[in-house]
Image 1 (spheres, helix red, strand yellow):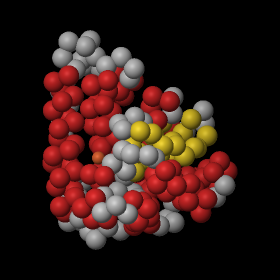
Image 2: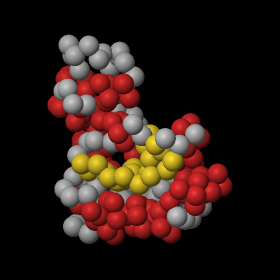
Image 3: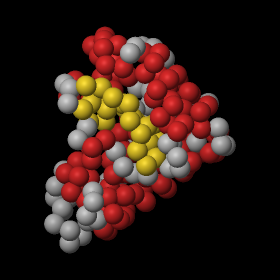
Image 4: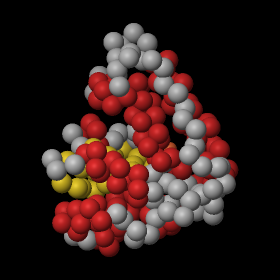
Amino acid sequence: MTFTLPELPYAYDALAPYMSAETLEYHHDKHHNTYVEKSNDLIQGTGLEGKSIEEVVKGAHGTNQGLFNNIAQHYNHMHFWQWMKPGGGGTSVPGALAAKIDEDLGGFDKFRADFIDAGVTQFGSGWCWLAMKDGKLQVMKTPNGENPLVHGATPLLGCDVWEHSYYIDYRNARPKYLEAFFDNLVNWEYVEHLFNQAS
Ligand SMILES: [Fe+2]
């Protein structure tokens, strides 16, 4: 099995003005494609060939840093494109997920503030997350390509806070990018789909 770059689920200009076509062209066609190509190269001879992407991410963690960096980023970006949609974001969270956010995270407004804060305070490159662990929702942040899978959790929503994700559109204003992502781009139906799988 070789890993392949998935098509974007929308046109390059579909997320403007919150994420530009130029950002998506670089981020998807160049950055994500490089993670895919390097994963296919670095997996050779590791014994992880043919395993599911989740198994490769977990199998490479702590044992093969080069493969881990690239395959984890492939996994993260495969979902990242689907975690956004034109006209997304806002408070239109599906019912069961909204109730779970109230129960575990102190309500939607606190979840929004904590998610954005996790992204703002991730020093350097990384991701902020909504994840499910042991039946409970939690907000997390991770450096570089690391993700909740290697912490025994299931990612439900993630935002890429590497500079390649926002520098063209927001320069150094990472908080503004995170607010735009949360308020205008999140595909809550996809988050709900992952929530139902994890529940
Ligand atoms: Fe990225």
